Image (cartoon, rainbow, N blue to C red):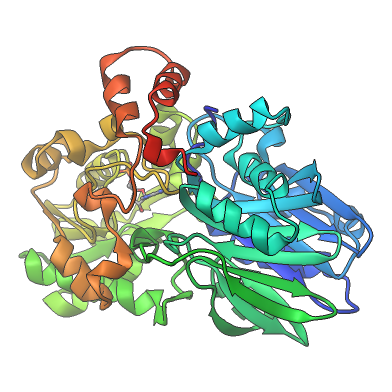
Length: 486
Ligand code: AMP
């Protein structure tokens, strides 16, 4: 278990009585492309069988007409995957398919399971064989092998055993199930489409399909959808809400609604808040495109400094982190942005970005702006410093990779070459989002996790040179009992 411990992905599902739904799933995934660009997959069901197609790359690269025609049936689930460093293999694409006493099951997962290694060991002891290195297969097997006569009992078992974040879509030959972990850490919502039903990581997928948003799937809830009976739902575990606030800051699309709040105005409010917390004397405001443009507009309005598009983004380069190693990441930044000297020449520039994770993006951006003639460069970040890794599905790397984990704000300012640097405060973040603090997981900014996490992994990794597998093995040996589950 080394390759897929952190994943931020998009999941989608549809049941439309009497219709062929592969194409709907394709377009649903298309709208969720920002959540994962590494691989994509669709599983469909026609009441008798499950069909599966997965592949590496963007949704449009993975599926052509032939592939879609191979996916018959009125029910389907889909997945876009975004894994971490280096392990990007076709075999790990999702949905994954397992066969178990309870029958065949296809499953797509967004999130990250903290105790996947332990669960996998337990299953292997029972003789279960694994064909991929993903925690999603561990989830699928844990569910499909779970004791119990009904799926309801198996889901309750799964939620007792799984520790971590998971928004799931699962498909049997005749029913679709969607579930959200008790923290509701990753988004998942339910909608209707022409007499059928859709589930998706984000509401933007509904908008593109002309579907109507009904509600979010609740933390700890399982929704079962069949062509015959429509939607049934039950609570499989006690909710304890800890929604990932980074979805608002960076990950979700601007036009999605999370917990009744459209992301776009939240991002503007984040920009306005950082303008209040860290005012700057500047001639122009620019945003690092595309993710920080809304925040830069909010900053510009609050500070009363004109917003200009001083950086142009090549839209066909994926999110920087998609590159598997650090060297390629740095090249990626140069390929991604091009400054406009005519707008920047001789100006004092305030640059708004949503986050500094490893510090890979901001350093070349600042130097690019200076080379293009900016007189001063002031960086404003619409999140607090990221000091602790995410164990729940956002790829932020390990503790030692997080620049704010090892440098002070002034050292980071120096490292990126900015004239000044200002981060949003945690209180300012909460105020700008406008929801109660106790609804959120803020662990990447505070180090306070909503459940026990394998912090030891980082400690060992820092002390020992060599591969990660070894550290994970050592951690597995000494896994705290709290993570083992019942
Ligand atoms: P870094 O370059 O490592 O400091 O990362 C920060 C930049 O990457 C920012 O411009 C963000 O917009 C973007 N970013 C932040 N978090 C992620 C993530 N999980 N995956 C991909 N890009 C990210």
